[in-house]
Length: 494
Image 1: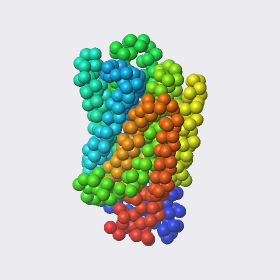
Image 2 (image 1 turned 120 degrees about the vertical axis):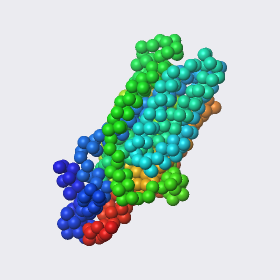
Image 3 (image 1 turned 120 degrees about the horizontal axis):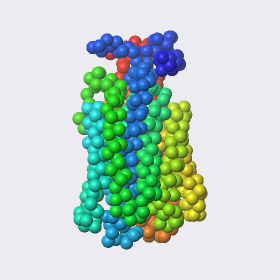
Image 4 (image 1 turned 135 degrees about the horizontal axis):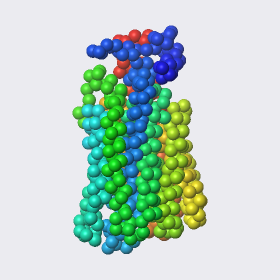
């Protein structure tokens, strides 16, 4: 009832703006074989009239599934920083072994575009729900198999080869994850709350980080160094099997998004090659969206992976201390992302993302100054400052990416924008940081690198059009919807 009243309250100012005299006239009616369905003009998909439990279930499925999938992804990064150099690259020096381990971490990013093409194709043609279940299952199988891999001591060169193959499979799985999770959340959301609902997959990322860091922290706390290298490192990977079952059960209970169902009911022809059509018709939107997110993905992977190695090997923090800090500040960052998404529904996506870019540039050097003091508390302050910038930048991203593309291309467009950014800026960031530090022995080139990415993001979001007042069919709220074919008097014309 409250959702219904909220939709009607929204319809009244729209009626005035479009020349309609009563709230009821601001409702377009569309008939189908089953009868007549009502859709508020400001929300032609009917998402505003969905039962609250349906929207909550969709948001929960987005959060839980993304958490599990990114847990799988990040335990590889944590293991790369802590143990993979010794287990899979023992013939290299410590610095070279760490660089090789991070290169293995980066390989997964190279596979992401293939996952985007594969899952985006079926997500736009078949539906969001089945593709999300498939991506979660693929990621889970690969992660459990990593936990069962023999090490270099057992099978020699085949150990790192198999590790890289499993990482490639992980990359394919996650390539289809984020875009689908973002759409499940935003396409179930009523107009005016997509920013808040869109934080569901964004929140899943730090939850996955927090969970992976927490599990590894527990393992390192109860295992000796010898036990950790012998069998302890396998526990976080094998635990994924349990988490995947939970994620699959929740995702299987979610209904297909109302936006996609509407497109099917209206017999809208799906694109034959969605990714290619996105690149052909929306290249500017893809490049600007990817560039706007670039500083966020880079600093996220720097803080979650490379910093773990730097803080333990160069500053002298214990592995357990660093992992605990990562887990705690990731939890605190969730509130910032939720607030950022909510606020973006009121003032727009661009101001929030631009603010995040500015904050990131300002804290690039202080981040290292605080960490290099050797105080774990000041390191925690530095890590939390990163979460503040990430919160502003990442909170509205899912809503922005969803609003940039029409329904028939949205899965591919949102996924391509996100994965292009994470592949180029995120996947290379730990390797670039390791190479810069190995080559100079100083932190300042890394700080300059972060500032450069922040300025790139600021430029891209400045050039990106504002979308928070748009319907999911891409037209501004209050204008005639091409999907509904409603004329200026509120009458259905098609």
